[in-house]
Each structure stands twice: as structure tokens, then as C-alpha cells.
Image (cartoon, rainbow, N blue to C red; front, side):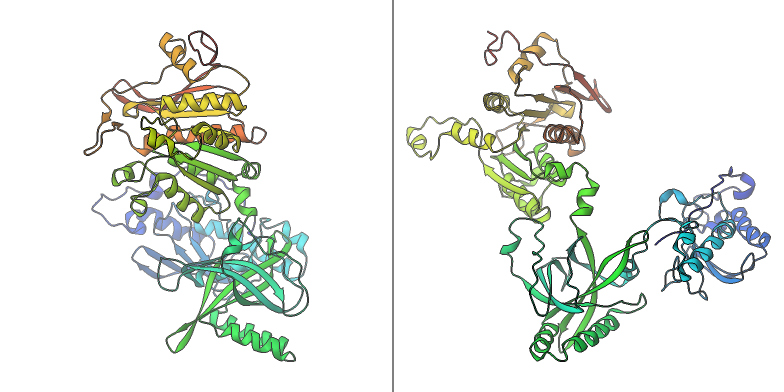
Length: 603
């Protein structure tokens, strides 16, 4: 809603006299009983303004006052105090007023403050808020009614007032239709809409829809289908209807559908074929209708709004519901500014365990265009304590589990899973003869198709192997791991242009010339039935390393859009001796080639 501009807020000290002494824990929890002095201060504030007050409800934490307001304007108001008063804002409605702006048409709630969290001042009495803001509400509404937008802009917050928000309380739970924020719509009154539809497991008849196209009933329409991610064209297309009309904020879904049917009937009255087609679409087991209307998308600027109706066959009858619509693409990219720069970039992640699994999720959420995942392990029940996915994926290879989860929930990113172990050696000639490809050729192909290589394997063998390949092929290499007992961790970045390698880093640590991460040598266990030791520590600790790996990868892929500093080595401390401490990072300015490292040609 285009909210009225808040008056200057004058914060006052909360006094003991106003609030009195809070009751003990065993006392009442209704705020007006817990703080009787505050309650009387609220009532006195209305009296000072010349308002008549009557309590019409005071049960179960809800206090509602009927107010005869006389200051400046005479109006009947309803003030509903939050059960969390004074920390949360009150609701003020005007049941007998009808304003074109700054009032919910259904509940009659007045918009005295914006939705920003800092707008409500718990030290201010509600009567004083009304006195400061009600005149602005009325002035703005009158200016809009008289078509004087400049005058209105001077007394209201310059924020949009989208009509679609008033219908959200009527939407059915757990269903959604996603649409293009810039969806092209023909200039006609009605037509055919195309959807991809899939069911959801949250309840009977719940579904996810994707609005792919809106076409006129006749003639050519050259606008391409909305294709937010690759592969969407392989999903079956379901046809529905669209109609251009102005819904009333107080209409029910059934009333909106009836109004849409009347408009469509007038449009197709002289077109028998179109009439029969639209009738078939309206009688399907799940018939979808898009209502297209003009609504304010920016302050003072109108755009296209959408409401989505679903009419289902239920037994021998039919049932109409309103489904939430959500814009896609522009809003998504706007929330993570670097996402636009990442759309055309690719990463190779080796190791999808307790650190790499979260790296995969966060890179995809950030908007990465392509992610290849290499891991040889499978998901087990024990993984769930510190891995991002659990029971649904038990028994699957970790790379495949992440692939299924990420492509289903973040389909804009191409995810490529590989079940493989870097550097595995064979001593059986027959098994070696079955190899379909030279392992190094395979590794080099995966590195070549990536813009950055990220190692979260915690294997020095894998780290050194990948670092060597990346140096040869001119690719940046980043590695990260946690130390035993989740006492600390390491993130190291190796540029292809020179400097040291992971083997050099080990030699520097041996010489104690670079900072070392802390280690808890007791923090290692061998799970029952497993011959591979693992270290202790929860995801809430290990994700410190995951997050820095993600930030380092994004900064490497999009340096002009995301600056993460020019350090090559960051060492994390989570413990100081036996005590847990706040995460502390220490960086080094360089990892130079060490003369004992044969890999870099030092010795």
C-alpha cells in the first residue's frame, strides 16, 4: 500500500510510573493486567484527545477499544492492541469510512505506518499515533480521489499499493502459480493460457503451476514462452483461460470466476469454435483461469497484475479457489546482486560431504549457472547430523542426492553429478583394463569445462592432484576443510598465475612460517561398521568453512561484483585450547613456493 509518511518520531524514556512493576511469572499474561499503569496511560491519552472510549473485547490477550474520535475529524475507530503490546503495533480500523487509499477494503484497517520494523515506537501512545497520522491518511485519500497525485505524494510514503495483496488472505494453502515478472499479455480481452503443472505432497489437490504463455483466441502471437530454466519444455503443457477484468477487493473466488465467465461469454459469443474451446477448458478436472488487471507496481506507475483461480471437480460438484501468484526472475536476481554475474559461470566441486554439501547448496542459491559435483560416498543415516539432506536420500550417492534436490528446487542452475574418487589406484589388471577412459583425461575434461575448482574433500592427495591440474590448465583452485574436533579450519586460494601450492603450504606449516589452525586430537571417531575414521563436529560449526569457501568462489568468479579480499590463506579458530570461542579468522598475505616442494619446482 502507498503508506502515509510517518510523522517525526520522538522517542521518550519509559518511566516506571507509566509501566509500574511487572507481575511475577505466575501473574497474569494479559498486558493490561500485567502493566496496569501502561493500560491507564493508553486510556488517558485518548481522553486528552477528547475521544470517547469503550472496551468491547478484553479476552485471551486481545484488547479492542471502540473509539469516538473528534480531534480534527469525527470518526468511529476500532483499536485492537497486540497481545505483545507495547512491543508490537496496534491495529486501527475505521469501520464506517471508505477510502480509496490507505485502507484495507475488507477489514477497514487504516495504514498509519509502513510495514518497516522500525516504524512502530513502543513508547508512543496509540492515541498520539492516530492524532499524528490520521490527518495525513485523509489528506492523501482526498487528493487521490480528486486526481491530484502530486499533492498526495507530499503527505504519503511513496510506496506502491498493489491490488493483488488484498486477495492473499483468500488463497488456498500450499499451492502456487509462478509467472514471469515481465509477462507479455495480448491487447485483447480474453485468450488461452499455457501452464506446466505438478502436484505437491503437502495435501490433497495442492499443486505448483508455472505460467508459460498467454495468447489471444485468434491470430498470431509471437511472444516466446516463459522459459526460466533449461528442460522446462520437456514437461507437458496444460491449457487454461485468461481474461482481462478489474476484480473488486471484496470479491470471493467464486464471484471472481463468475464475473470472468460473463466477460469470456461476451467475447466469444460470435465465435462458435472459440466458445466451445473455452467451455471445454472451463470444465476440466482442474480448470485454471488467469485474471489480468492493471495494478500499481511502483509508486504512481501501473503494471500488469495477475490473480489465479482454480476450479476443481470435487465428487459431483465443483469448487473454486484462489491460488497465490509469485513473480519469478527479476525479484530473485535483485535479492542477490552478484547472481546476474554468476549466471554464465561454472564451478567444479570435489567433495560433497559435511562441508561440500553446503557449498553446493549456497553456490546454487547464489545463482551459479552450472555446478559439477564429484563425490564417491553415499548418504547414510549418520550423515544427517551434519549433512544438508537426510532420510529422503538415504542410500543414494551424495552427488546424485544433491542433484535431485537442487534441480527440483533451483532449476535455473545446471547441476551435473559424478560418482567418482579422484586419484584412485588399481592393482588388478583386469579391473584396470575395464577402465573406459584415462582418469587424468577425465579430470582434465571436468576442470576444462569449469571456471573455478573447489576442493572440499579434506584429502591431501586429492588437493595436491587437483591443484597440479589447475596450475597446468590455468584454472583457479580453492580448497577448504575443517580440523579434528571442529576446532578450526582452512580456506586457501591458489591463482593459476603463480605462487605456492597445497604441498608448499604444508611445508610452510612445518616451518611454522604461516598461521596454523587449531586441532582437537581427541575429536576423531570411527563409526560402528565403518573402517574410515571421521572427526566430530556439527554442521553449525563446519559451515563456517563452507561459507568462506562459497564467498571465495563467488569472488573468484565475479571479482567486479563481489570483493572478498586478496588473501590466499585464511585460518579459522573455533577453539582456544579446550574452550569454544567466537569464529576468528587469521589471514596470510602470500603462500610462496617452498624450496622443498618438488611440485612447484623448488627442489
